[in-house]
Length: 258
Image (cartoon, rainbow, N blue to C red; front, side, top):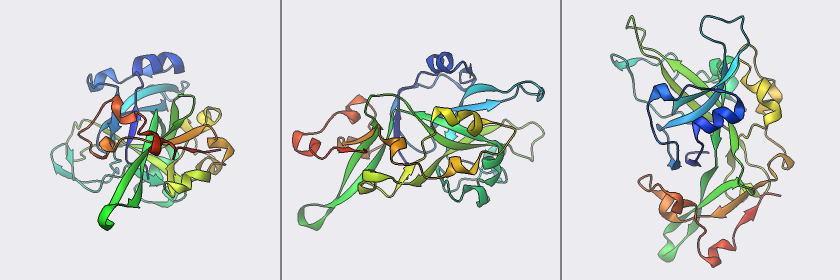
């Protein structure tokens, strides 16, 4: 599962790096640095779309903010313009998304990338007096480079209103954990290498099924997992201290995914 991650990606700089159109300014001036991203938060995504009303033109990369927790197209409105609250669909199994009603439409034509510095996961171990202790780990590239995870997105509108503001939402695809990462959790977000972006983001064609498969150990060889402070256990905590190395004894438990 990927239920918490960290990002320090500046949309403006990323737009320049990717030669993309920055459409995040229209969704407010939310801070782009978030060390404890949780479901229902507005997150940065990368999509490839045609200009509205010009499907004959070449599609372009665009940066958009979306609610993390996909809202299916068929979701009813709880009140005008507001969807019914349900279980936040912040993860989708890559091996089942194409046949799952909530995600199958998005798999065909609405795929995205979710940039992040890394993601958190917890190992549950017995503590004093038999009480379980959750120890957080942070998975990231050893060289500090940005990760891009495969995602799906949706556009929800209140069909009962003549003019309903679109609500964009997304989910992160997950796959079986690979290599030593299985020591932390049996699932992991699905990384999308840059050489596959054209096929993955193509708005006009379904993605090759191979892109939804579990990556090889070699494909994630640059990712390392290290123990981090338990401060991350609470979403109320949010700062660079969440990524600081813990004590030397715990630091010895760092895992390298090689």
